[in-house]
Image (cartoon, rainbow, N blue to C red; front, side, top):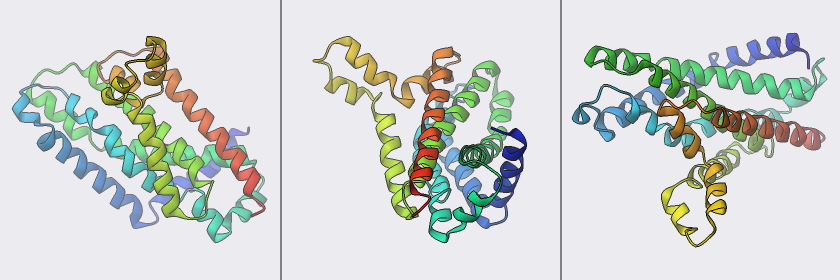
Length: 245
């Protein structure tokens, strides 16, 4: 895999986000909902705590709908318009194209996440938060976003219809979220503990909530990175299978 080719495609893909109003709409909606969830639904001021735990708690649910909306066009639009044929005639491999598109989407999401820094400034103004925990929260959020994006990329490669790609991505990501939900785990209370722990280990919530508490466990990082690699690999296979369509 040639990093020079990935770099060129990455820059092209990232700049394409800002060539249309879609990027700005996404960022505005993300920032608006982050504020609503944190300060109103999360009762930030009522809690009287100088931290961003409420801010990060809602991220899985924010990403559940916003990221599929971002990824649904990654490959579905390319296949529908036929531009994927032009892309694959360039001196790049399918793997390089997949990685480039993913990294561009991930970088764009990182920009949106970075623009929430006024919240970090706010909690430091109001009190003395543990900034290491907050930094861990941002890291966990970015890793989880990458997992969402990788899943969305793979689903987008599966169909030419963006709406279908959106719906399926939401459903698949919801499964990864709910597998660690207490209600779901309680349903398997009859099963041996090892089965319950295995189901829980597949959940975004289990690994993400561990990180936002400030516990940087290598297993949580490996989980998200492994998930990203697996779904990007699936994306490359799907594109290879369907490039003749």
